[in-house]
Image: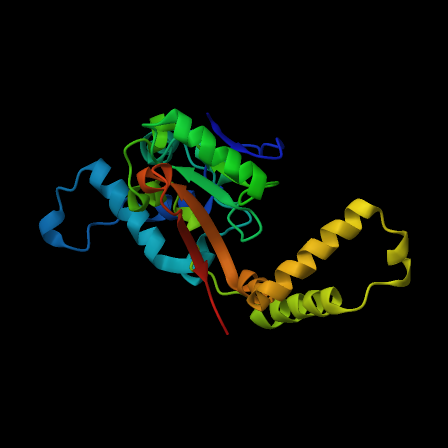
Length: 246
């Protein structure tokens, strides 16, 4: 399967030189290696080093490279510096890294039937659903571990600080509203909706901690469901998330 967005509204490819990673590479490409003994660094090693430096910058450190009107690279810069960084199919999703967009990353391609079973569970449970991104391309991710995969798509590692006060207030309002008595019009709800609401209330009574999942969700900046060999063999998902708790 390709790399795609579940809602079928596929984003457009950004112009070359527009992405923060592009801007960073163009600004750092000609600078010498910080270790003089590595002055003969190959271009492949240089790209790997710059990606890792970009990862280490974190959210705040990347802000200077988020430019509204970045310089337009030359064709030579595109071909030599930018195009080899990663497959172009990933560029269109580089800005879609927020906590509201789930991401499914498939790393293991050895058991197609197990994959279909796991994906069917996702469709039923909606771990990654509308607006979610699916990275399912063996030619890109086959054989990689998580660290190597994130170097192909470094924007997903945000290290971003969030407005916890705003998010906490929003989710507290949602929880309070959910705990209020049904509105007067509830008696006009369909039997199916009444049954659905009753099941939700029953689940909450069995596990009161469920209500705190909303506050935890408010603190999650970005997250990835990793389909690796462990998950395909019936183990748990490698669920990676970046979160900041008050």
